[in-house]
Every structure is written in C-alpha cells, then in structure tokens.
Figure: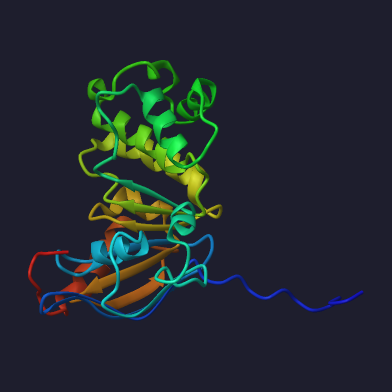
Length: 254
C-alpha cells in the first residue's frame, strides 16, 4: 500500500512566531518574540503591565498586524491567507464580553451564530445556553445578568462555531471567587486537549489549572517558558516575582 509505514507529517503549530515585533511609535511592545504553540496546548501568558502580552494576543486574534518578523497560524501567514477563514478557527473570550445588553441571552447567540454562518435557531441557542447553565435565563435581557452570568454567556458565544483555538483575555476580571471557580470549571471541560488555548491574565489562581505551559514576558521579550506541571499558585507567584524583578521596567501600556 502506498505510503504504508510512513509516519504522517506533524501538524503545524497553531501559532508560530519568529522574531515578532510590534511597534507603537518608537516603543517596541514586542521585541523579537520566538514562540510556538502546538495543537491542544494551553499557554498561560503572564507579565507586568507593558510587557506586551495583550499585544501578542491581539496579533494572534488578527486585530492588529505585526511591525516585523513573522506570525503564522496553522502554517498560514494571515497577511496572505483568507483572514475570514482563519478567524472562524478562533474564539475570543475577554472581560469585555462583546455582548449586546439590550438583547436576550438567546438573541445574542442567534445573532452571533448567524454572523458565523451557522444555522441558528431558538433550539440551538437553548442547547448552547444549557451547556453553560443559563437555559433558564434564555429570555432575559443581558443587562439583568450578573458579571459571572455574562462571562458564561460570553463563553457560549465564543465556542458557538467550535473554534480550534480559544483566546482568553483577562476572563476572570470582575468575578468573585465563586464566579471565577464556575468559569474555570466550564473552561476546563471545554478546552483542555481539545482546543489550543492562549490565556492572558493577572489572576494566577483560577488560570493555572487550565494551563499546560507558562510563558512570561517582560520588556517585550520572553523571559521564561516552562511547563505548568508541578506548579501551584504560590509557586508560580514566586517564580513570576523573581523573573520579572530581573526585567527592566517599562511604561504601563500593554
């Protein structure tokens, strides 16, 4: 049989950055980043204000373009590929939510689903809401939701189109301890091993159990890249402080 015994070629990294640079005027928010994120990895990206972590996430989300170096998503250059097709492979969950507060929970999902070309109806929206514990609030307007409920709805929105990679931008901001634990549990059930995940957060404790790898930025450069295995929140905090204390302070603009 043709090709028998020949191992398949390894899948391209979900994210591959080489010498990645992003300038804002004369300030280098990213200064020569080399980083691969493989399929199914969950990377927790940390750093002080101004380190470049949010800038890196925005580049991966294709909300901005690099100033130099290369960035490839699944082996493709977003500058030359079909950006719409690439965006359909990405889900974004942030503290902003991107929800319409004058619409109901179901109406939000139907609206976003149709933007992605999905055959959305009330039944499909109801199923998605049930998966995040909001089926009973499907007809309530979002402005009446607590912060935790809005984040659960935003998670349902971000995963509607079954993205291969999920970007988490400060997802725990504004949540109380119980809300953070609930969101953490839902993310763990839907992300690990099934999707590539890149998390940017200042809140180590709920994020760490979701991570397989820790990357720390300072002054626009990677200063640490290690597995998450064996770390607890206190240990990570000690490593973070020790690592970033060695870095040169930068202006607070990430």
